[in-house]
Image (cartoon, rainbow, N blue to C red; front, side):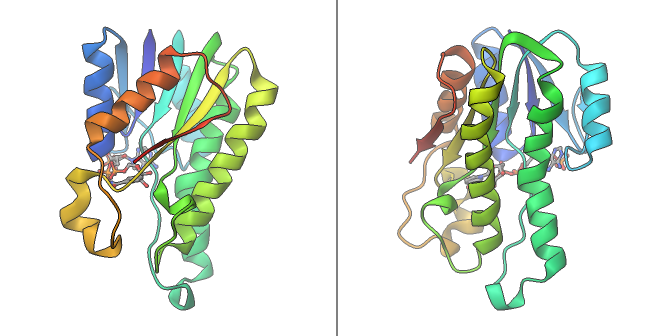
Length: 199
Ligand SMILES: NC(=O)c1ccc[n+]([C@@H]2O[C@H](COP(=O)([O-])OP(=O)(O)OC[C@H]3O[C@@H](n4cnc5c(N)ncnc54)[C@H](OP(=O)(O)O)[C@@H]3O)[C@@H](O)[C@H]2O)c1
């Protein structure tokens, strides 16, 4: 399959890209600063240009999405807006515009995270954005069939424990390679409207 991987050179996206290439897929790597196509998915016009450049797509997978972490009392309106735009609206836009460009039985795989179900102090904006993505996945699935849409919800990545571990007390980390296999399940399987938790 021809698969667009957004965030293809990130911690998670690198593992997803490798797994898809190993399985024989043709990967179109997308990032803001590096990739076959440069695109900031938080900019709807840029998403439109991405779909003009990447044609004949069977699947779009996303391993990108910025969120602001700060105690609720310190989060500004701009922080909340940036997080919803960076993590939720960006991914929703990939699907909203993508349905016209992806193959009739193609798929979208978005990313959320453990914070939807297991909140941490300072993670309210990210939790809200993840929840929005998961609700959108369930809603979009019933409208876009036979195209499919799922979300992968990883726990803290093993590769990120040095940076983020102290903020996730007691959370069991998961290797990015294991999370990448959930993306494969979404791309190659027939499930839709699902949140594939990996912990
Ligand atoms: N790391 C974890 O433990 C963990 C756990 C659960 C969920 N997640 C979620 O998984 C996703 C990836 O996390 P990560 O740790 O792999 O992040 P990362 O290492 O920072 O990588 C993110 C990648 O996505 C790209 N990117 C970010 N925003 C983008 C945008 N608006 N448009 C296009 N590309 C964009 C970045 O490209 P540039 O560098 O070129 O900007 C970067 O290559 C995030 O949504 C995160 O919330 C992560």
